[in-house]
Length: 200
Image (cartoon, rainbow, N blue to C red; front, side, top):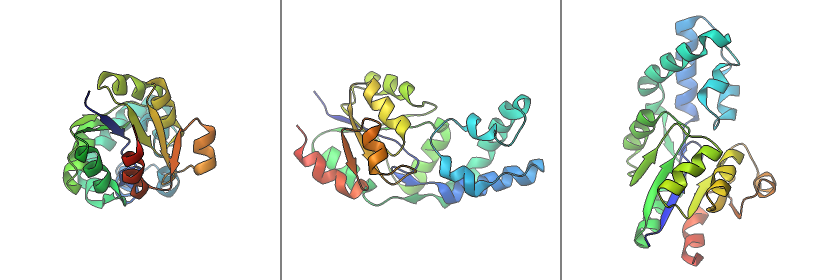
């Protein structure tokens, strides 16, 4: 059976904060509504609707999601940074004959744009999924391992009976990721190839 390893996107593979801040500022300018973009980028992971609900009335959130996603390619994609170890982690999976899946809560077309921009080429991309919903995507693609920075990523891995690997590059530290049920916690993806070499 082919090994499939899933990765979260924001703050696992990519530091998307600079670009997302720019996109929130653009939305703020376009709507005249103040958005604390510095605060917003500390809460990446959950669905976009949840963050926008902090700044816009409920009846306008769906419209703001559409407007934000339209701004994303121009404002957010160019500021994307690859986190240390991301490329090497992809290479390590493929060196074992495996497949790389990116399972993210981000709008899938924008996730693909972001990955293309930095030159990361996963075999599978699934967007618009969060927490236990990620478990459905992981099961569909037969992923045995899922790597993420958020407590919701750990929940997704557990829902799929996949090995849950936390990376402490996002909003949560090692202790919180362990307490959420992570099987393994790494400082960042630079530690992933060595872990994978020991995985059976």
